[in-house]
Amino acid sequence: MLDAMTVRGLSERTKECYVDAVARLARYYHRSPELLSAPEIEAYLLHLVKDRKLSYSSVNHVSSASRFLFEKVLGRPADMAHLRPPMARVPQKAAATTRPRRNRPTPGLLHPPQLPHAAHHPVRQRPARGRGLPTAHG
Image 1 (cartoon, rainbow, N blue to C red):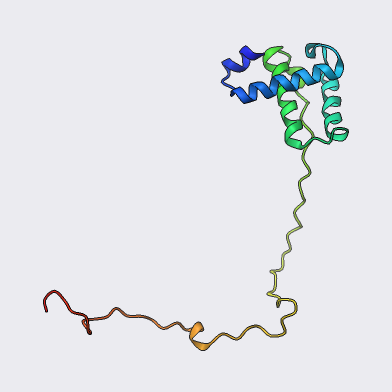
Image 2 (cartoon, one colour; image 1 turned 45 degrees about the vertical axis):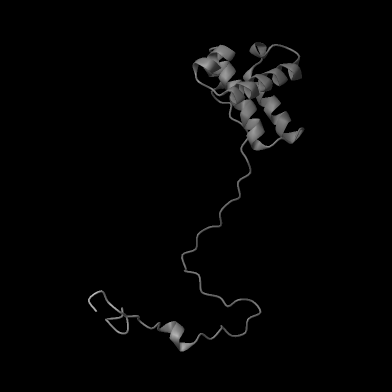
């Protein structure tokens, strides 16, 4: 497995994590990972989510390591074709409405703040044309 990861240019940290994930999988079932089936790996991933309460990224890493082992090292891609890690809970977006939102006043504020007239119509500044500034010509 290490040679296959090296040939594919995986980083040292990824190699360490993949080897550790496969070793934990083997320890969980008390046998070589090459003897495991896809349903057993799926059950292990479910165990990581439900019982161990690991994060999605941690379970995804184990799933990726298992997929790498079966597809690239053992040459059994068909075993892993349907196996995908459990998905993270993603908040659902609210349904879009067809009506535009109205501007609502700030809660607790009875009247909107009154801005001075100048704020609505800023004064246009013009560049100074020779008024009071000395020039090189004198």
